[in-house]
Amino acid sequence: MIDTTVFQDKTAVYYTLGCKLNFSETSTIGKILREAGVRTARKGEKADICVVNTCSVTEMADKKCRQAIHRLVKQHPGAFVVVTGCYAQLKPGDVAKIDGVDVVLGAEQKGELLQYLGNLQKHEKGEAITTATKDIRSFSPSCSRGDRTRFFLKVQDGCDYFCSYCTIPFARGRSRNGTIASMVEQARQAAAEGGKEIVLTGVNIGDFGKTTGETFFDLVQALDQLEGIERYRISSIEPNLLTDEIIEFVSHSRSFMPHFHIPLQSGCDEVLKLMRRRYDTALFASKVKKIKEVMPDAFIGVDVIVGTRGETAEFFEQAYRFISGLDVTQLHVFSYSERPGTQALKIDYVVSPEEKHQRSQRLLALSDEKTQAFYARHIGQTMSVLLEKSKGSTPMHGFTKNYVRVEVESDNSLDNQVVNVRLGDFNEDKTALKGTILI
Image 1 (cartoon, rainbow, N blue to C red):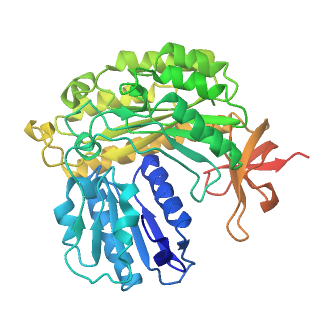
Image 2: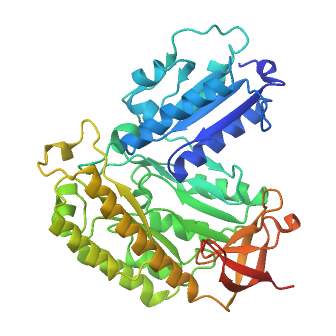
Image 3: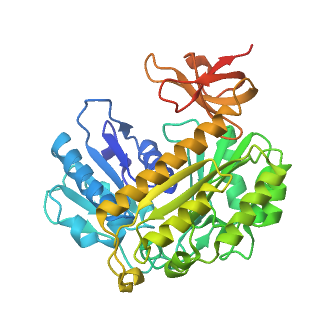
């Protein structure tokens, strides 16, 4: 039995890098600590506990993790520092050597955090405790709101795909999940806490069901029947796992929004083969076409990696032309980063950093064109928007069903409320449309 009196009047700060799944898990850690009596430190207040949830998708991500740890150690001298997440799982020894780190927490050991923090008062700075193991089998549930209006429901973890450039299967383990019944129960609890929107997260969510003999489509159908949650969004789902029946279901669903995020990674079939992806450009294009046939106004976000080994100038131009012709809304562009232990290191052709940058800039410019054209088609329409409270005197923001970002005059009484908004022109930096709330 853990003596939680040691946590009374203690404060904590949280810093998260990486994907929505990490943010969800950080929120769960925060909930564990709050229930034990730890409050979140106020701005400028020295914290007793620092939690850093790390990412390791690129070399730059590793660097940002190290910088964040150093910064928090400096800002909160003497704090008990816990580092978790993919970087901590992949390189626990490196993390443990960073000055100020006390615990390197393994990928599925977040529930054990309190036992390590139980010695908070008598802790002496010294060699960090490392709990990370290579054998990751358990599934830790997570459904948390964090600082935002939306809840993030972790439905799956791990990946069996082993793409040639990726270390995530080593950091997160094999694909696994909880039951549909447990997911529905967590969503029901989110609704009881006032949640109106849930984002389904995971490493490879379309692979849901391997552990339990169920399917992702089964999960979507079950969640759609739950009263209280008005909106669900499907986060990144592999194109080969986004079935036509899922697309058709979303098109007439009560609560699943016309919003998809589909990783493409390259618009060139030769590069996709080098990446060991499980689809080709024809399949990807067919999925986009199917979505637009049944949901013409659907938002489609796409992940693209530039400069991977083997991506010659000719292959990139093929990819650019393919992506340019896709009816998608936004590109999330990443420069390829060499990761130790990956099969991609065996590919001979290497793209220079300068060329990676140029390719990235071209795709980001293309993304801006596509996003702004998509937004512009909605000017003058009236749409329902789920609003989030603003910070200070800044405008409130929210999203339409199809993920158009909307900016309205601040009124924090409307936080977490779905309201009808007439969409006007772009805001100054063209990241949102200005809206007028209709009473």
